[in-house]
Amino acid sequence: MAHDAPAGDGKPTRLVIRNIGLLLSGALERPILDADTIVCDNDRITAVGKFKDLDTEGATTTVDAKGSALAPGLIDSHVHPVAGDWTPRQSQLSWIDSTLHGGVTTMISAGEVHTPGRPRDIVGLKAHAITSQRMFSAFRPSGVKVHAGAPVIEHGMVEEDFKDLAAAGVKLLGEVGLGSVKDADTARQMVAWARKYGIQSTIHTGGPSIPGSGLIDKDVVLAADTDVIGHVNGGHTALPDDQIRCICEGCGRGLELVHNGNERAALYTLRIAKEMDQLERVILGTDGPAGSGVQPLGIIRMISLLSSLGDIPAELAFCFATGNTARMRDLDCGLIEAGRAADFVLLDKAQHSAGKNLLDSVQLGDIPGIGMTVIDGIVRTHRSRNTPPSSVMPELFGH
Image (cartoon, rainbow, N blue to C red; front, side, top):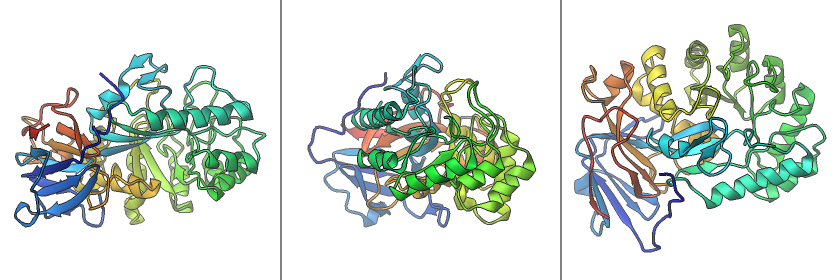
């Protein structure tokens, strides 16, 4: 059951994960590390290397990976949370906990737009954003880090509003286009104000997602100049191919591919990014909860889809959901290196997969089996209740 998972009892902790068969770094430039052990003190990675070369004494918790793979915890770059681990969009509880069982340890809000009675006046939308930011800072469902408090911009906002939001701790804008602002000039001005005060922005791309939203085409997307092109493959309805190409070639911003979008358009976007030698721009989200439901395996499914049908080595596809997003979003997780957050997913090929190993199975299109998740150096889940069973199961020692 989802719950506000504490970081611990305040006493120093040391986690040692050994016998890692494959260490995925999350970094495109070096996706596989020559290492079999990770040492974490409290909530940070402190050492990565070979077991024989590391100081592993004093571990309060030891995980024997049993030869399974380890990757940074997956990041969902596009979710729509509301309150705690409940979504009114599908009247479902524990959707975040369920997504943790899909390997996702960090989520980024693209707007709390499903909140019943969401305020659209300036005072109300600012108060709602600040409240959401505070709520998810104080409450972490099953330990998952939800970066929330993403106001949807509306006509009438002025520069001072963005200054106020930033001063209150708001760091994200919800999808531009989900509110009354759908014209290029207003969007560009407000996005610039947000950027001035350190607030990241994203934009709805494509046809309307639900009644009340509208078409956002290439002209508005390019003019608005948001930091992330939200669901460039549509959410769900994609723009025509020539417009997608225009967006990819016309800016250097993040290209977000989502599960709840057009799969063919996602593969087309990926192909363009590959042609341009700009795979670092590709990040992944689910765009859930949505009309199509909650997708606990949405991110891992996107990794398998893009690898198998997009002709991308699996170790690079994992970077789309980890290091690429962390770097673009300025997060302290997503990469396996000293000083980063100790957030991991241990996984292996699913039992009876045709693949020879994890990477081969993903490139064949299979979903891996997840054996364990770790957030801030604390084991949060064991065998996933949602993935196929992993060929190898890590073993936990200590507490």
